[in-house]
Image (spheres, rainbow, N blue to C red):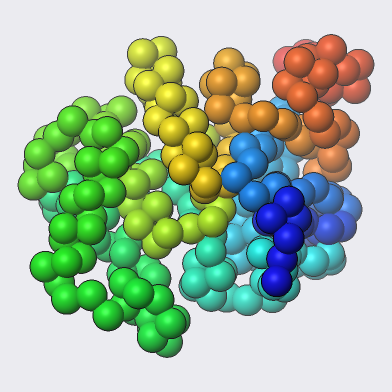
Length: 256
Ligand SMILES: Nc1ncnc2c1ncn2[C@@H]1O[C@H](COP(=O)(O)OP(=O)(O)OP(=O)(O)O)[C@@H](O)[C@H]1O
């Protein structure tokens, strides 16, 4: 049995090259249970590629990934979801013509269908209970909407939150968020940060790729900084702001 203070996610020495260009190079970090890690760095640093390696979109060239004591680095994406991870995307991928609750129910399906369903309680649930469970998730998240509202009729900030709730519907131990604040206005960004902190308080660990540093500061308790595919810093956000290598990476990117 894993100890409670053990790392939930361990990324060890992972690497990826595209056409001979090494875009992720020997990157290692951990996310503790219930931790909130920000993955930051200038444009093209390799953040999204790291996400895609963790969620299984691309195969690893090197290294290992462990989730909750289980080696997942070679599993297909679907089995990684069953192992306890979920992700939301940079661009909202909700079904616009379906209602909020129906979209969340699609997230439940991600875990409940397939062989893994036999091992998970929601796999046995009748449809009416699925819907009630999805409505409860929306309410718990504090979304002040009618669950029957069609997604395309809702403001962007609300849709972003529904997407997060949909990812939570598979009951992940770890939630990967790819630029969650992109496209949100300052009020919506602050509201989403509050929302994600509440989710983390419920025990779900977060791994967040984001350009908005204020948002990362609000949501995350630690950051890893990438530059040209390499990890150049790991520690507090305040420490990152003061770090010479990190400053140079961002300044260099600005100059470019
Ligand atoms: N599928 C791919 N094929 C070829 N090159 C790729 C592919 N995906 C990413 N790259 C390259 O890998 C590098 C890292 O890209 P990545 O999207 O991971 O960076 P990022 O840090 O997420 O950038 P941004 O902040 O701009 O989203 C870039 O040079 C990019 O052009």
